[in-house]
Amino acid sequence: MKIVVTGSIGHIGKPLVPRLVANGHQLTVITSKQQNAPVIEAMGAKAVTGSVEDVNLLTDTFSGADIVYTMVPSFYGAADLLEFYRSVGENYAEAIRQSGVKRVINLSSFGAHLSKGTGVILGAHYVEEILDELENVQITHMRPTSFYYNLLSFADMIRNQGFIAINCGGNDLIQLVHPDDIAAAIADEAAQPGTHRKIRYVMSDERTCSEIAAAIGKEIGKPDLEWRLISDEEARNRYLQAGVPPLLAQYLTEIYSSLHNGKLAEDLVHHRPEYGKIKLEDYAREFAVIYNGKNN
Ligand SMILES: NC(=O)c1ccc[n+]([C@@H]2O[C@H](COP(=O)([O-])OP(=O)(O)OC[C@H]3O[C@@H](n4cnc5c(N)ncnc54)[C@H](OP(=O)(O)O)[C@@H]3O)[C@@H](O)[C@H]2O)c1
Image 1 (spheres, rainbow, N blue to C red):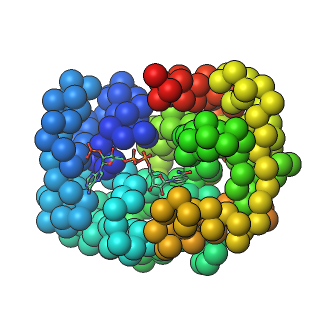
Image 2 (cartoon, rainbow, N blue to C red; image 1 turned 60 degrees about the horizontal axis):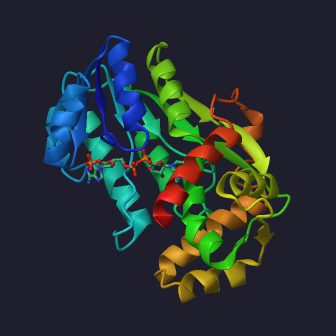
Image 3 (cartoon, rainbow, N blue to C red; image 1 turned 90 degrees about the vertical axis):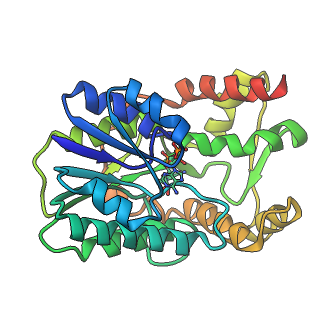
């Protein structure tokens, strides 16, 4: 099949592109950086350089595709991240309409069922709503849980304070996922017949914050590493003191608050996926390589 992949060879695209090529698909990958085109072509895919903010480029690239994989790239430079999600979602919808694409696999997020109180994840809710308005288009919304790589945002806190402290911690459960497992689920989805609307959760492991701290601590030589629970207010103040812009501080606080109170995962429990392959202990080794690399 002819498949267009957005999100280039980012965290998910990197394992996804070779997997889809190996499955015999004809791939076109959109990158915003010309220098990534040769890397994409070496993987056996065609590269198109341009932005997901350019609806004409999206329409041209989507034309003739059997499946389009849509995702909104992380863009922390955006003045309002939610507005960025909404506008990229609208670009995708317009390009899908204009190009006549009939099947979409959209990267969403757990928590996308909620219409408030989820920080940046509200962006995924908006994109699902925008795409769902498309008539006669089969859509699967992939809803991965919390990416393991989010844990890297605690590296400086671990280094400087010796512990993790946010408004989700201790015995709170976090549902974790690795991009390799997301890529495997997307490739599996592409191999199945499309349906009008489908939600598919992806999760690799599920552990308490204390268990996560212990696994990471073991690998970085801090076996007593603690993950403490602090209040929403304290967490927000810490972000602000660290220079995080107020709107982003609010979004981050909301995400961890909705993890702490279980809301992000409340719909997932009704559609539990099988666990993927990458367990916490596997990721803890990846974390340590990056953490130690930064120390050098
Ligand atoms: N973090 C979480 O826990 C979590 C949970 C659920 C869902 N998600 C969702 O996962 C997504 C992030 O996935 P990811 O980690 O695979 O993405 P990513 O690695 O952050 O970004 C993918 C790639 O998109 C390309 N890109 C950036 N800006 C672009 C633009 N304007 N036009 C075209 N391409 C552009 C970049 O590659 P080039 O440099 O080659 O252009 C980038 O490497 C977000 O939508 C997020 O909401 C995250």
